[in-house]
Length: 228
Image 1 (tube, one colour):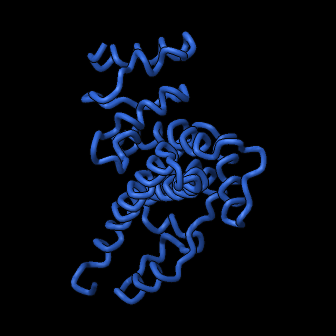
Image 2: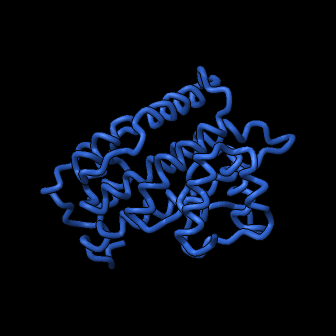
Image 3: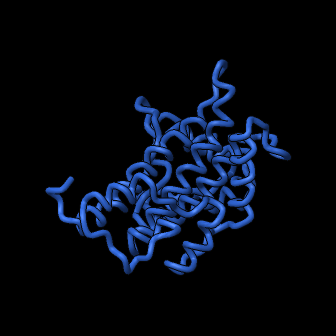
């Protein structure tokens, strides 16, 4: 670690956080969308994964401004001056609590969480699950996880990192086709990359039962990227 300059070690922090966030998002999508017999616990796991992804993506946005700002009790003016200080900071430093992250994000970057009410629902559900309790009032934790990913995280990571949440999954056989089908059935809006393409599902069939407003939104999105 000593061979790498101190400033370089600090500037690597945002990318490290972002890489972990992408991995957590892959698991969130997988656990929320793919439910089979024997995997009933995946719905609860998807809430934990979604919260983890949210925490890491928001911290990556904060770290882009200054890596030291992700730590709750570090003076950004007091930059570590040697490798042992960096190691101690990374091992022992306390980062901002999940519940405080929307306020920290707003204060540091000016960005607002797209849906603060949904963020709070997800936070409370995550806390319940971590304490071995089913989330109060949440009949479908998988749906909650997907709502959080696509109503809160997806707009943020698209504008801040150029990422599209549907592209992070663990279905190596058919890509994001089945994930997209689940989102369409739930009538959840999501960001479509310019090269959006599905071959394993019938889009018209998947949105057949959707509201007129949702159908119009999706068709407009397909038209926008030249896929209509």
